[in-house]
Image (cartoon, rainbow over all chains, first blue to last red; front, side, top):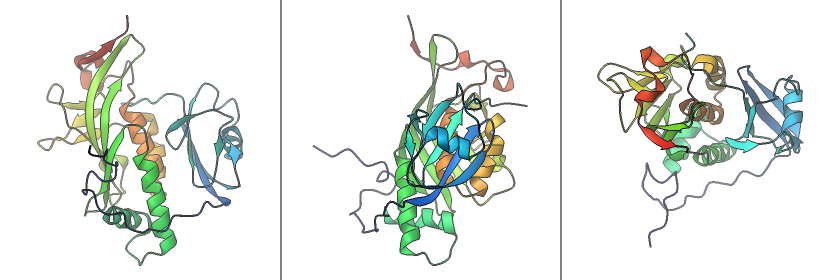
Length: 100
Length: 170
């Protein structure tokens, strides 16, 4: 039975795995915290912090993200979920296209 | 896969010689993008644009009906920095509605089938994400945008109900 294609295989065909060094998890680094509507802020953190703490450090209050859908790297999250350096944290209240 | 990593690293860091750490960062980000919900495939075009292929996109407005919008090719072109209008394109691979729409919020350019999004209230954030070369956030925003619909501000006079019904809740 053929294996399920990896998402990154499809455009290039399946190739032998090429050695690219795995990036070691860094304890210290930036996360990107964004809110729609609102803006984005890069925040330097050490180790893991909660989503709520990430928003607070980016200048958003608990009220600002109340009722928003939260995501970490595109996956649903809670205010208590943990984030680590390199992560993208997003709060979306309502996307409204065709504003004009 | 190596070609995609190299291409993506060039998007992130430009044409300079890349370090192992930069290549590892590029690989890590590509893996994050490839694992995003609805992403089926990713690639980097020779013209340095990031391409995502999505699974079926549906929209459920505040009603009991889910509408089928289509499978999309998303092109995130970093080179053009003037505005988000020219840096993000959506191609609906399944259908064009009323010869005009690739998505409720995307109008088709003449002849080429590319949907130009009206990004509405994510436009500034998208521009910030691209300016800082945060393609993970840009990809997340594109996917969220495709699954959104601005009720009461239907594109170009067409309502969501011109799209095929995917599912009805009883």
